[in-house]
Image 1 (cartoon, rainbow, N blue to C red):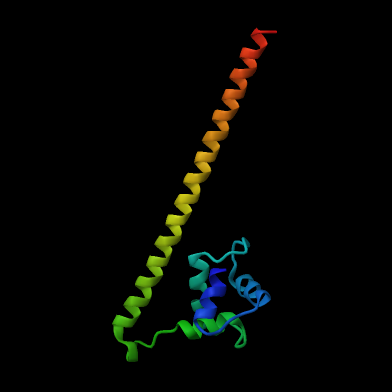
Image 2: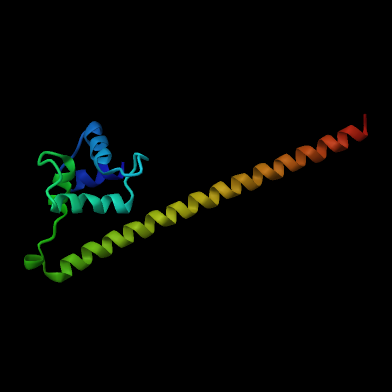
Length: 126
C-alpha cells in the first residue's frame, strides 16, 4: 500500500499486478515486502542499468533521482533526511505492534492461569 501511494504521489500510478512485479524484482528475502535495503537496491540496479526501461522500478528510480548540480547538496540532504524520518516512523509502528503482541500474550497467559486456578478450585468441591 505504501509503494502504491508513493508511486501515485510521484505521478506514476501502478496497477496491483505492476506493484507486485516491482516488489518481486528486488525482493531478496521473498517476504513480498520491500525492506529499506531492498528499496536501496532499486537505485543500485537503476544505476547499473539492470532494470527494464518500462518497469515501474525504473520509473521510480528516475522520479527519485536528485541532480546535485541543479538542486545542490541541500536537496540531497533533505531527500535523505526524509528517508531517515520515514524509517524512524515505521520502526515506531513496529515497536507499537510488538508491544501490543506482548500484551496479548500476557493476557492470554493470565487467562490460562485463571482457568487452571478455577479448575483446581472446582475439583476441591467435587
